[in-house]
Length: 135
Image (tube, rainbow, N blue to C red; front, side):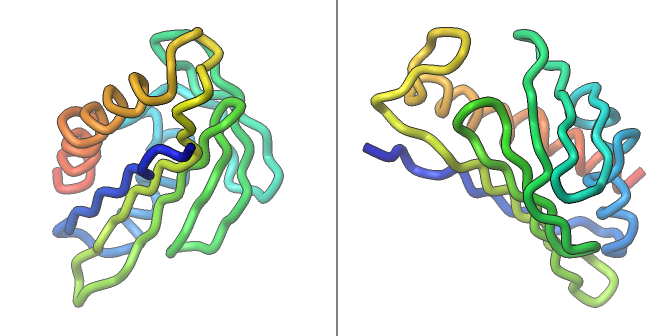
């Protein structure tokens, strides 16, 4: 059974191109999320260097400066959606692929990891992105 997708939105006081550079470049992603070897190309396989080890990822959708999607590990799918709002940018994170019957590569259930990730995105990662963009 699917566990609810994580979906969180923020408004950044920055133009869409600045936000895109922060979320769709290796340097930008490393500043607020994790070290990586991301390249903005459909099909590009890259790694996120997480606190739990290296996670394989693959770019599945790229529509600059509005949308970037990638697979993360065996089950997850992450999308960054950007929408221009008169000099500001609405940013939406979608983290899908949760299944209460599955466990992650680290052996923990999706339900447990989903709660940890939801909290982490909301309380740590997205505030770091906001701080990085609005400096």
